[in-house]
Picture 1 (tube, rainbow, N blue to C red):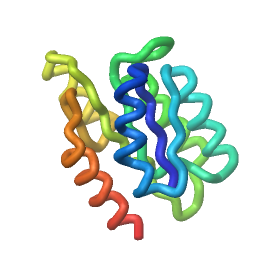
Picture 2 (picture 1 turned 180 degrees about the vertical axis):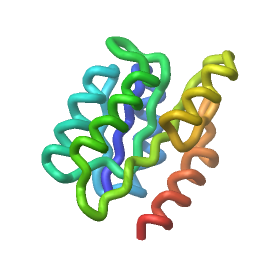
Picture 3 (picture 1 turned 90 degrees about the horizontal axis):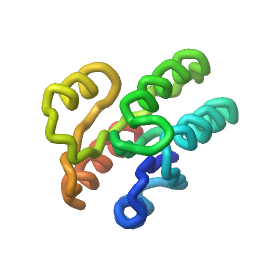
Length: 133
């Protein structure tokens, strides 16, 4: 299983990677929205999609909300037999709860408020990994 971390904060990227690396065969990291779309598309084209994504909503180049919507479009275009859509965890410090609720309903699976706690993220990962096995 592969995972993608899309986060512009270097400290958060390092922390998430440390928490996630034992759960996945491969964990890739990008620091802006356009990089996230590019690497996600490449994974689909290579027929080796990401199972799990941690996405910051407030990122440079392209915000996380638009990135995730693009991910969902790409997943439909490049549908891979026996492959489920990526489980997407949005992480954000945004205090506009209506924006978060809208994002959750439309495109992602989980929301974690920053600062992210290890037990919360790894608990979600454990649930996803156990369902995929």
